[in-house]
Amino acid sequence: MSTNNISSPSSSSLFKRVISDSRSLGVILLLCTFISLILTNISLTGALYTGFWNSEIPWFHHLHLPHTVTHFINDALMTLFFFHVAIDIKREATVGELSTPKRMMFPAISAVFGVVFPVFIFLLFAGQTNYSDGWAIPAATDIAFSLGILSLLGKVVPHSLKVFLTALAIIDDLCAIVIIALFYGSNLQLQWLLLVLLLGVIIFFVNRHLPNKSGTLIMIALGILMWYAMYQSGIHASIAGVILAFLLPADKMTSFETKLHFPVNFLIIPIFALANTSIIISSAAVTGLGSPLSLGIIMGLLLGKPLGITLAVYMMVKLNIIRMGGIRWAHFIGVGFLAGIGFTMSIFVSNLAFPDNKLFGDIAKLSVLIASSLAMTVGYIWLHTVFKKRPSIQEDIP
Image 1 (cartoon, rainbow, N blue to C red):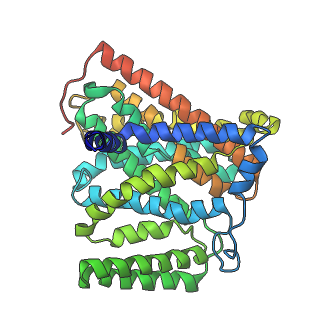
Image 2 (cartoon, rainbow, N blue to C red):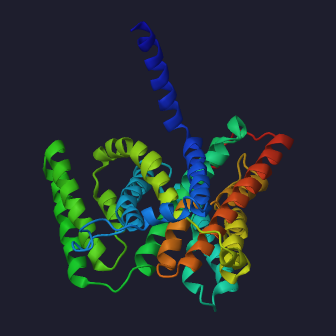
Image 3 (tube, rainbow, N blue to C red):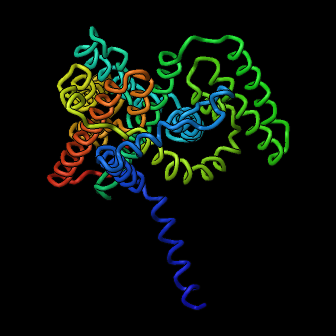
């Protein structure tokens, strides 16, 4: 009994440290990706593994629900991921680092440039080809990976640089959400969109006029109905999670964010990685790495991100919109490389861009993995070298 009493708090403490460490999710995603690629491409397990993710869920097709395992993960479970991301966006916009126009402008303009330039580079390579639907794939930044790599550098990283990357990645995700909503839906069904609007109005009043516990339960039930209506509307169903988060009252945000932290980051996203990196590395897919699609994604993430972000910072400094403070140009270039880690959102957009062409989807996902790995490596080495040569001054950007 005494042994259990001693070990239990220690195990609990270790578990809490792991799930609160920003590096943990990145490590888990890398492991899931590695495992998925191996299982997919080993002859003994390949057919069984890919077959599982493509298998039908009984009765779901008749109920007009996502009816394969992967489809359900991407359209249903990932709605919780978008809900969680949108809560983070709303919190930062109301009480956090984006709560004033001056605070928001710096990372917002940088994020927009960091979205536009990768898209522009992708279109230079693939704009006039059959791959053009993938234009938004290199636009996204993976918050968990980018912050996880930055945290590996330790205390030499100025607080203001962490804040900048966090805010930039959050706004980047918002841009990706808008792109998905506007450009990656199917034919709009207005009657279902009107139902989404009606449910949104009802949820708004429920959140503000019913007691916490009963109001929350009713909100969740109505939220599921909103998701179903959104799924039928032609707009990607995950956007329902974003709308629901924006309707959430400020006093409930912390509770939901805390409760969803573990299931979203350590269950849903790893499952998403396992399902969506089941990529057959065939000769056709490898050959496709030299295609305009692959080059557009890799160059967009690896060069477009740092180029766009650094140019935005340069313009704002020259126009006296911001002052550099204790952060130097080399730091922003390094952060720009880290912002090129696309992973989760870029793979998600790959599914939407090429839903009916598995080869194009596999090439896109392989390209995302290659670009993200390069961005991760180059960003870390760049910043490690910069901080080693000249330790940073701990001073925030005004």
